[in-house]
Image (cartoon, rainbow, N blue to C red; front, side):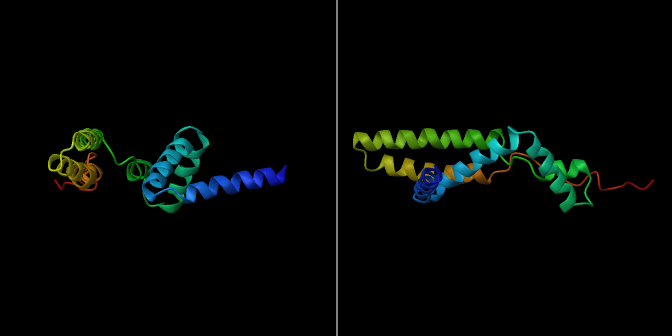
Length: 134
């Protein structure tokens, strides 16, 4: 029975090593969502680790420091990129040799990186740290 488990685990890990990095990043993001949000005890472990790592910060600052960095604007730009890429592949299938590469480069090299770079969650500018003197 142990040999079956070993070969099954070995085969799965060997298949994972063949995947491109982009797929591995997507899998790691999905694994993060699954391990952080579904079992409740992981949130407690994460908050305890944050308290131990940053004892000088209060609980509100610790919660704001580590949050999901993507917002609605990121997803809208990413959806636009996906639509443009699909249109690019359709035009490539139709035989276009000028429009298709432009759309594919625009989608892959411009819009997807922009969707990852833009900031959707404006951070507090430190207004709570400033005190006014009367």
